[in-house]
Image (tube, rainbow, N blue to C red; front, side, top):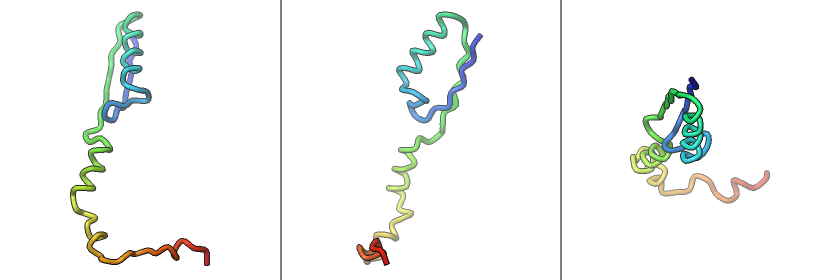
Amino acid sequence: MTTIHVHRVGDKALLPQHEFERLVELAQQHEEIALQICEDDVPTLGVMRLVEQGGAFDFWMEAGEDIYTAKDGEPV
C-alpha cells in the first residue's frame, strides 16, 4: 500500500490538480492507496480579499497626503 500525504491550498498542490489526480489514478492501478489531504481553511486569495474589503487599512487613504514623494527614491 502507498500513502500519499498532500498539503493543498485551494485546488493547487505541488502540481496542477488534474496532474495530481492522474498520478493517484496511476498509483491505484498498481496497488491500493490511502490518500490523506490537508487543506488550509482559508485560501490565500480569500485572505487578500478580506484585507481589501475589511477596512483595516483605510486610514492610509484617509491621511489626505502622500507619505512618500518621488524624491524619497532618489539617492542622497
